[in-house]
Image 1 (cartoon, rainbow over the protein chains, first blue to last red):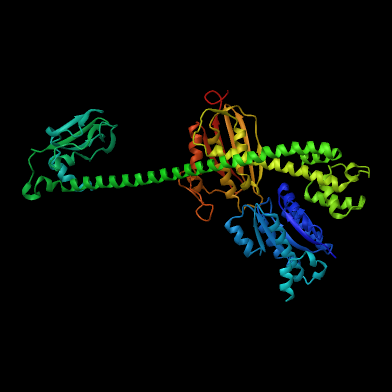
Image 2: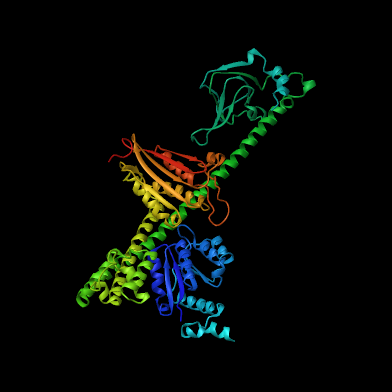
Length: 157
Length: 449
């Protein structure tokens, strides 16, 4: 079975490593990538796509030098190769307008405020990856024990 | 009042040499609440009226020059009592009539008060206008006071919040230091071989960027035949320069173990870093909210700039900031006020550069000819000339909409503070750069501790 990719992006390394550590329980069945800027994410997804890998979820900070999280997610949302990729904004300082753009333009699936709770983050990623697997028509049985069972049931009904 | 209309009246009553009077500059014409039986007409010179209450400092209430009447109220109200004190400001020539002056051509023009009706009405409306003007000025002053009070309240709230946060973060800071010592001691006893990795993480933190870690991880995967996940973790942890290490490299003997201890060290490192950072911010906020502004602190301007930058860390996240400080003499003033100056200018720059492609701020400090010069430049949009002219005025703002509205006080505060130190602030702007220059006097009167 292929390991699906999760990408986390935050310009502060301490924050990034904390997110990564919290997501460790998922590492046994998902490949978790880290990036320190939006441009690094764009480069990485190019690379992954070229190798035929799939990006299931991107978790992005908002305020970063260069492109912001909302800009990054908007760009990815309009790329047909990543149309099914699920998007999460994890931020402490998005304004009202940023948030509206995140929903309307980037089509984010979930919004987390810093500080986040590890369990909630894990559950959210689990749910989103499950949805991604069904959206892509992948064989869910390969991952079954790790998936969000509620989503699985509702998909199978 | 239409002067032409009054000409015949002036001609009839104020054209008699025996009722003309010369007054010297500074001499008293009428005393407030004293008897005044005359109506004066100013032929030349300048006079001023003052009003004082309960022996307080007299307040100027009017000035009268050529063509003006003095004593209209006391003359026509029939009280014969002056409402203000009138003093000649220059040598002046006056003409007058008094209560016993006979009425000219009363058959044709009516009584004295009828003839002087336009003068009386004019005096009334002048007083009315003055009252309106004063009511407006008072309203404005109250409004400013109210805003200033709001700012003070906000400042005090922020200081209170900072105090609470300070206690909390001090606990985090000291307990993480303590944990660090305890873990080090424990490791020395139980896993002496692992101390090295813990300390590496603790002292250096993670020094490798995410993209480097990705590349290095792939390399380790191949050369050491490790699973992907482990190779990546090792790539983050191992100090740079060990890439071609042999299998005897201590990091590779028990990679799971070494990484585990390195991570504990790195986490403590990050914890300490975050606590340190928080302490800095809290300190700056406390500075800003202080009400006891001490004007004779010996301080370093460069430090105040650094504190301001720390305060604005989150606004500056997307901006590339260059700070080029020169060694400066000690400046005597208030740290709080100076931080306020830099924060206001920098915050404005951040707000202005919201739509700027790659926003930059350059800060220079220089010392030349007993003057400290601070230049803050940004590559945001040009400030047009109309805006530039009003930019330092209170209540002027370009931020009217949205959540991040402005009070229009920022730059007027900057100007007030800088001026109080005998310095000045200027703005220059074109399509490429907007530059604020602040000059502060150093040396004899200011500083050189």
